[in-house]
Image: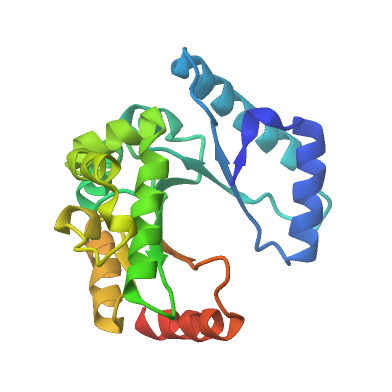
Amino acid sequence: MIRLLEHDPALLARRVQTLQGFSSNRFLLGVGTGTPGRQPGLSVMATLQRIEELKNAFQSFPPGVQPPEIYLATLKRGIAKRAVGEADGLLLNFCSPQHAIGLITAVKRQLASPIEFACYLKIFYASRKDEAAQRLLVQEFLNYDSAPQYHEMFLQDGTADTISEFRRNDEWKKGPIDLPRELLKVSLANPSDDELSRYVESFREAGVTLPVIYPYFPSDEKSEFKFETLKRILKSI
């Protein structure tokens, strides 16, 4: 995932060509607008224009190298609707199934042909204690809530008040954590195989065609645990 407007189109096209060549045309290009700024509408239009420029540049790829699919990151229905016909897929992040189904339903009304709806599903793991994974989860919510566009989404999702409570009261940093149900709709900490399977299925039922499990670990986590966790994830889904 890159902030598209921060990259030179010609140079980016050459890099994409190289990646497609080395990966046997398996590269997917994820793009976003970056920080919206004071005029988010202009950033969106500039990003869509840049996507069109890239598509034109991709047409000059040599035989055997195909243009990649382009996924546009979006949290809002307005951006998603504008991207129809420009992007091959839409990419959501750190949202509830309810938020996903609202956006997907709004977009599908104007689709002439199907597109992919992808979503990053953040899962937090720790080998020593469940509390370690839970604290990672809470901290990630606090980090994202600091961004205005995510705070607005959390308000719509009904998770903003819960996140604010964790911000006001830092007892969660010291003892056991009782993760509220609102947060567990969006993310999980040290889930069982069945919990992970049900969680992924909730997004599929919301219309997400490409759920992307995104595991997080403590910075000092052992590589053996990470490897075993990845194998468990693959078996669960």
